[in-house]
Image (cartoon, rainbow, N blue to C red):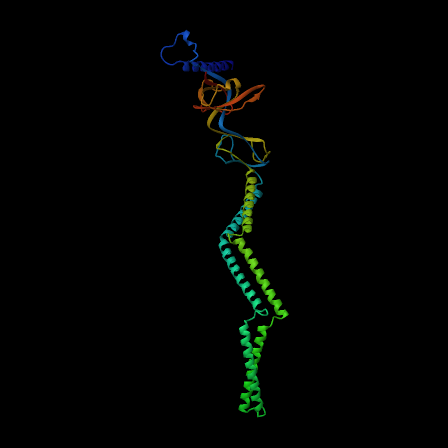
Length: 400
């Protein structure tokens, strides 16, 4: 064991020496020993050395959002899974599945009601516009009827004078018919001349009565009952027009704003309820947040699993990187993204891998009194035997 550690350390220092030699040698003959000291205009290649660990490009410790009895374990250690694929399911999901189905039906119903409202809007607008036109005509008729029934407005003065003249003529004709009938009234009832005189008398009397009744209507006024009926009909027509105008004001720009707002609110509420039901159902499963390999799954069917406790570990091992968290504040200023690096592992001391600094975190953390920074090195030639959390020795090249 001591021999292996010695070999690993020796290789690490050999890497540093090799980096210095390869980067300082510029071809041609080696310079004299006295010329190895750099001048102010020259720069030497040095290295920042830190310890780190191997991590996948993406990894996560997974836990259940709700506790419960495990019904199925769908992916175990070593299984590859796609993003969103379930790793395990909890029991008693039927109630939540029913809630999702009911919420989905409510959403479909709300969407159909909104669609029907939007499609019916043109028909409702046309019908309401027709109702408004009819209400205006009804009010016009009621106003005319009320006006022509009032005293002094029933007809013109010329018609009244003509009616008076016609009545005078009719009264004279009635008198003549009465005289003619009196002359023959003593005859038998079947007498032809007597019958003709009686018929003329009846006709003259009817004409006189009709003309008198017309004249009385022309110059008269409605009775108390008739006036009450006229007033009520006019008020009813006015109210009908007001109601039609209000209805038209609501739909002339399309659907009734209140009805439309209620229908849209119902769709929004149904959408939220469906999302909540689906979220509650999704919490009954442990799913992979990304594609990768299951490194460990501690769940077992029939056992209770608590919420919030890591039970499975998932890694995207399609690529590996090395992460160090002990880059000192003195060294961090010499390291930047893009700097080349060499990496060796305690587990694979004979393997030297190349890498490039991917990023350096911009803030430091206090670790036991020292401020250290995190740097991530992307491996350009990873070894297939890499495993998560293998310890690594990193040499990052810096120019000064």
